[in-house]
Image (tube, rainbow, N blue to C red; front, top):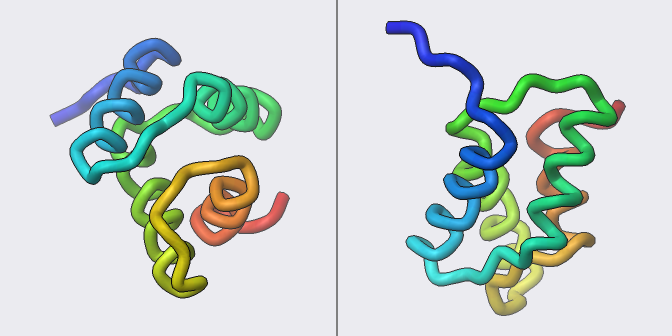
Amino acid sequence: LHLDHPTPEIYADVFRRYAASVGVEAPTSLIANVLQRYADEKRDLRASEPRDLIERARDLCRLRRKPFALDEEVMNIAWAAYFGLT
């Protein structure tokens, strides 16, 4: 089974929906920054990655004993943990 890469609009929708399903808000500006980072690093969008990035963010919040929230700092660390440093 081959699935095409999602468009940025579909990726953003998947990101928002998964965030909502786990009870966290995904600000539009945060999603825009994530999409920009994909473009800057010339990475293909994958529909499973919103879940993976959000779960890394949740793990980080747990580790820090902080409420689960998505912000730029948390997403930057989640990104680095998932993709590595570029």
